[in-house]
Image 1 (cartoon, helix red, strand yellow):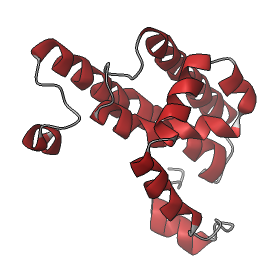
Image 2: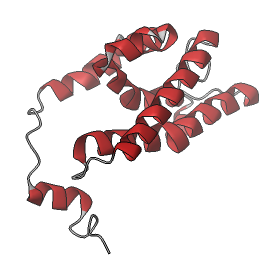
Image 3: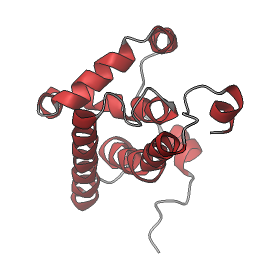
Image 4: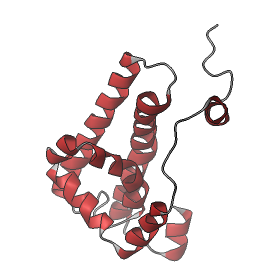
Length: 155
């Protein structure tokens, strides 16, 4: 928010439009990031597959995708015009592309993802990722580095 305000870019100066952007930025921070992150963790990294946790976070992620799809049926971008809200949310939301069926039922979300993906700066940024090595199976040392050695101990 500081950089957007300082540069006068990606954050409207008109107060109502500004708070629309802030609202959707907070939606990402308080909902999208935490819920999508937990969904990814329990589906891919948790050493123990806990079906309740997987279902809880996958279902909440789907609900949030529905909220976004509804909003994007009303507006071209989350905050009205392209803004920091879209920039913060896009990296979390592109994960839905792994599940074509989920994306097919959300045409507004698909349009938004395609529009952002086609922006030159986003294309340039995403191209950096193509040089990244493919993920490998996580060994115990990597798991310990990411999640701590005591995190999953039962007491």
